[in-house]
Image (cartoon, rainbow, N blue to C red; front, side, top):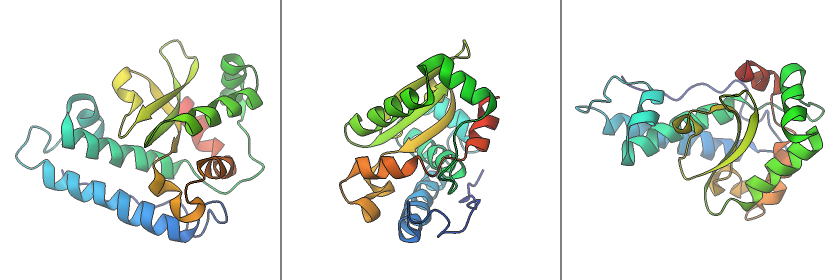
Length: 192
């Protein structure tokens, strides 16, 4: 199976001023594409040649896992964004957040802290566990919660390439902007 860069659900400048078109050109157009290209070069002749990304995330190790997970993680991240400064969780996600964290503010603070304190590069995820409760987890590098039997519903990419052009080394500034970009309609669908 040959993987292709999925089309963004918005224009390259649609997330400005929180994420610039220049950052998307590099993050989506170069980094995301590079993981796809590497994966397509790694899998021919392996047992993963016709496998889904999810299968590779669950079963592969090393370079195949890293590139498959990064393709999946980036696709998930980009597809959950839109510019909507007034947006907050709705319906079932809102109820689950309040049940799991006490309030939206407490959830937002905990998620931001997890993203700010993740050492090095990686991802912070809001996931639904087997009991239907929400958890915030940190994953280094290409880590993906599918491997732990968790259902991802939201992620924030905290690799420097996600924010360096816009925020340099100021990860907290990027995280503040991130809250203006969550597409809670997509998060709601992922939760169900």
